[in-house]
Image (cartoon, one colour):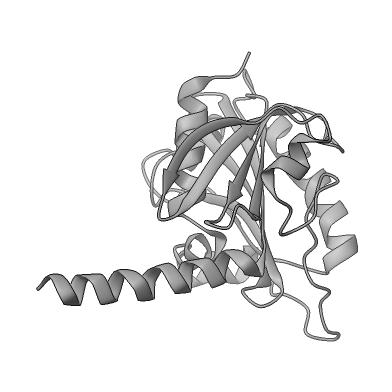
Length: 228
């Protein structure tokens, strides 16, 4: 059964915290950053980020629905409509639900996978296993990511407080990023939701998303200037 509060939290995060912003927010003391931050490879050009789960960037909502996908509207902000579903043409194991973002032209611009809630996992072993399994598969296709993997910087410093630390701003991060605005982006991250509880979120972004964001911000700036 899908947790509706979890759905709303993800919808908000998917709209307002694209990987580019989330990546910039990761800050750690230099000693920790040197040990746990993995720089992306620069030896060869990276492939463009393809849409996952049997989808294609720019697909219209009705084209996705015609493949038997049941989409439920969640919210709309900044010209982006968020829908959710529990099944896509190609499913990733352990999914609680998926979030799909469409722009004002009804084109698919972002997809998010949200795992089932992990529970009674006080040291984060199960969450890390899930995370590293996905990280390895994505790395094989898109190369080494930029990774931020540390805990225990503030408040929740005990080993059995893994998820509580991730849920507390400034305590820790467990995330990896691939790509750029021009080629598309991927974010893989573990989130905490209580002691021994958390989930894994995997997001894919199309360059179309950033085209929409740039256009929306320009239009908003013009309207704000006209209003003053």
